[in-house]
Image (cartoon, rainbow, N blue to C red; front, side, top):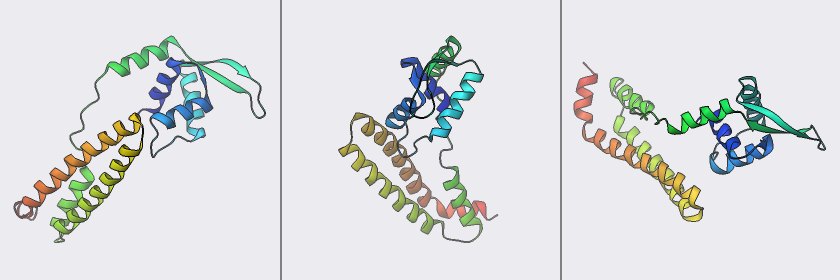
Length: 174
C-alpha cells in the first residue's frame, strides 16, 4: 500500500493534523500494521517538499505547535490519478512459498511436510480472519474477506502442488 498516496487521499477528504491522519490511517488501513508517528511526519515532510501538501493553520499546543496539513492541487491530481489507475495484478504472490517447495525438492527434503505445515498456518490465519469478520464492523469484514480469498487461493495452490510433487521432483532434480 502506498502510504503517501493514502495520506494524500485522507487530506483530500479534509485538512488534518498529523495525529488525526495517523488515527484515520490506522482505523481504516493499518490493521495489523499501524503507522508510527515518525513515518507520518516524515511522509508529510516529503509531500510538502514535493509540493503535494502545504501547512495551513498552526495551533499552539502543550507540546509542539499543531500543524494542519492541506492538500495542494498537485497532490489532488496525484490522488485522482492513483484512484483511477488499476492495481497491477500480482501473479507471483507466493514466490517465497514456491521457492521453498522447489528448494526442498532440489535438496532432497520433504516438500510435502513443508506444505502440510504451510497449510496448517494458512488454516490458522483463516480462523483468525473469520473471527475478526464475525466480531468486527464492515471495514474489518471486508479486509478479512480480502485476506480469506487470497488464503483460499493459496490453499488451492498447495493442494494442486502436493498432487504434482512427484512430477515436480523429477523436473527440478535433473
